[in-house]
Amino acid sequence: MRIKINKNLPMLQTITEDEFYEKYRPIDNKFDDNASFDSKLYETFGEELDYCFELSKKENRVWTIIECDDEDYIPDDDDDDYEIKACMYILSGFHVVNRIGFMVTEVPYEHNIEVKLDL
Image (cartoon, rainbow, N blue to C red):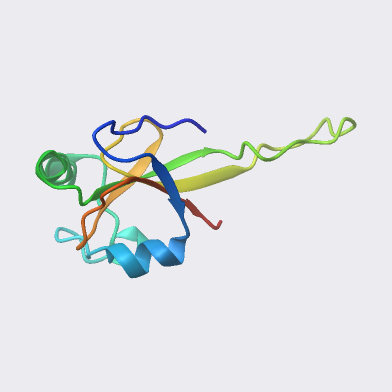
């Protein structure tokens, strides 16, 4: 997977999901008490999208959850009926391609960060 990094921040770092939750402390969605990801997910439309987009221009506290194909999955030569496995990442910043939603954290990020989620 290739991501576009913010060149104003240091190089890409990879952290675990536990490290992400401990260090950056995602906050609950202020518009929807029943949001996914334990009430942390902001939607990709409407006032939630507008809120995340505007916040991302001012502060490094918006993260994007994206879905992708698992690049590490390699089918066997005789496996004609395989399915490509999906994977999900949380990426620092506001991204559009393959987004599922956004998270806002208490603590701002200082690096380009990716978090591979365990599915």
